[in-house]
Length: 109
Image (cartoon, rainbow, N blue to C red; front, side, top):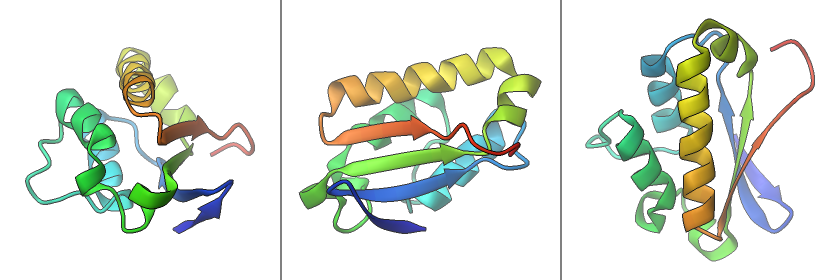
């Protein structure tokens, strides 16, 4: 799902039911419509989040807001991996002013 939110193109990254890195990478690839050559590793994720050329249409002009929901089960099942994912998100945001990543806190998913 994507929509215009606060001037940025918002993309929802729904991690509901995901408890391992492979699932996070697959869901991210789908949510952001990443190319088939996306490497599905932490470095590739950071690079893709920072690379405007692979962002969804409209995001380059507006900026990109990635809304991560349903992340708690993943964080509980694999806390070390989840910390790495958060570090990757934070690094990408630091490197790319047009990017924002937020974690939803509502609900149990």
